[in-house]
Length: 297
Image (cartoon, rainbow, N blue to C red):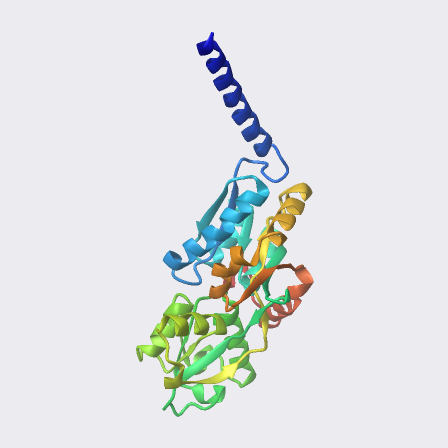
């Protein structure tokens, strides 16, 4: 009799477990049994992955659904992945979001707040060695400039827009796409270029890691503040899923987003804050002013 009772109890536990999985899979927050969250490697993926696993782990709890982190190759690959239904969620750079919105229907949900709960921002910058004769953007004529990669807000579009304002186009200087923000910084510190874009996020990360000594360099240009990266949801998902994602993201604690926030120069971190398309309207305007299209990402 005891053996029968044990077997019945085991069977009941198995059925309960299966029922719980089916309920989660069929729920608005877990319609396909898994949520795929994409990021572009704006920093060394080996450093980004542990930080984002804290965030996605917390998101898994809130959604009651497995959340799989996917580090894609670049901006273009991330946009394409969402367009092709391979990502339900993705964090884009502000300009990357413009193209993801137009091409993949990405909808911004949340971004990174400070300790007071206000949306944070960052700035693009161009730096030169301290003893460089370059004092302004105009002095870059005929010089070499390392940018991060095509489609980057701070590492491509904003520096090129600033150069255009002083009459410098691509033919007036040597532009070198280094492959990322860390690579552009290294190109400068290793003496490979005359100048490089270094945004405030990369500046903070590299300074903290001891890989950049700002006293040996000078900043000759800085952009206006840029609203921080949005976490977006695919427009093709259901309204119920979008609502569940919004609630989940805004319910994460500062501690659960702090590791990612440090890469974005958000320290101390606050909770994620709600954003919408209008938050990033200046980036839509920038893309139109420069005549940028999806092919530029």
